[in-house]
Length: 346
Image 1 (cartoon, helix red, strand yellow):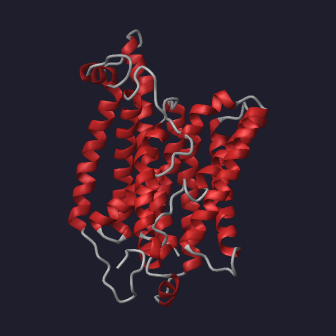
Image 2 (cartoon, one colour):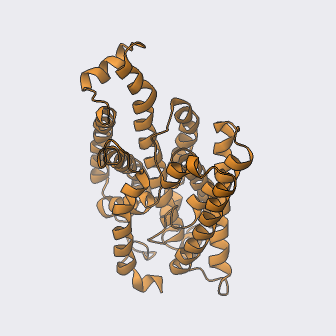
Image 3 (spheres, rainbow, N blue to C red):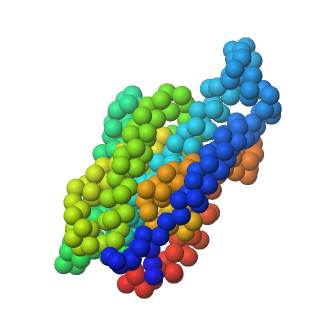
């Protein structure tokens, strides 16, 4: 029986010990991964130099400056956006009971990116605090368009297949408009690497602005986790159990907008993180979102940090966009899920 087709009287399978193990091991991997990310790059830097730059910073030491101003905020940004994208995907999958829900596949990333292109074109001097707010609006715009098209396409009956098709249509249209605007306003060069997904330009200022938003989003997701577990049993079942399904979906959508908007404004529209991570976590810990959400946050951070190390080393001294590295894993995973769930998609 599929995790997305649980019966009302079916026990909610969960493995707390496995979840705790993932959280502990994942946290250790993130710490060491951040260290490995800092020493990886064109400039050869040792772990001893990293330690000295953190506890005995010397502004006259070029390596210390590189670590503090470039590599450390980049690594931390990777951990944050990985957690945000992964939790967003987990929440979307739970709320819609759609096994292939992801912010990149359902138009959320494309909506955020489109609005940000508008901002870059018409308000190029706007500060990052306002840019991130516009990113929230764009994420909501993309999701709203996808769900509206999927819902009203045939008599108000929404299916996972229609969601994916609507997401593909909306994503393609918004991406095309974004590219046209970037050419028209001659900002295509500035947007090229950002659009492909990358955290090479992350700075302390960006990290400090998105950090509170992502923390709030992750905490809100944890608060909603029990309600999402019940909602994943089915909307009718959840309503029968006293669940306020519309309220849960509305709050969940706001949390997804916050997490996705904060991430896209920093690294661009990186897809597949929210698709890959929740499925792996669900396989390991079960279907209780009180464990899925924190484990997804940890594993999402691990995935992005490791992928970013690969982005820096695959074609050194040149850098590969992070989105391309993630897509190498995500596309086969998506095709596998689509084939596995083909009966549920039709």
